[in-house]
Length: 112
Image 1 (tube, helix red, strand yellow):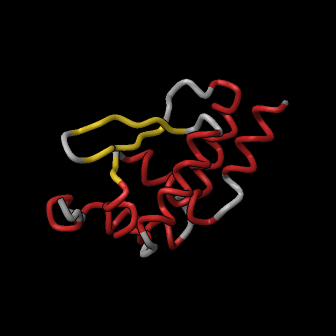
Image 2: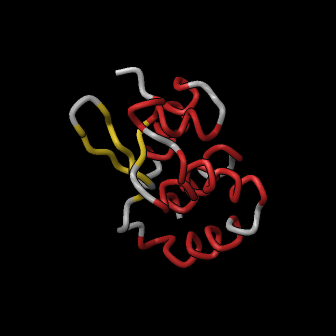
């Protein structure tokens, strides 16, 4: 029950829900997420930290960048997350984010 509460609290934010859908599509760095969401990199990092603490995401180093991705073993919430992701797909802001995702170029939006 405690894990479920932590995950639900981590997802109780519009930007974290948007990040959830974006990371469902592919691994992304903070720069890319910041560009797509239109929020600052420190804000994205804070959101990612909360999602990581809830066990929703993980990261890997790729040269200069840290790429974030959804964990595939969040079994406590698998059906809940699938339902949530399906519902989010209907939202206009999510559709806009996913269209931006198709056009984002890491080498252009990242400062390294």
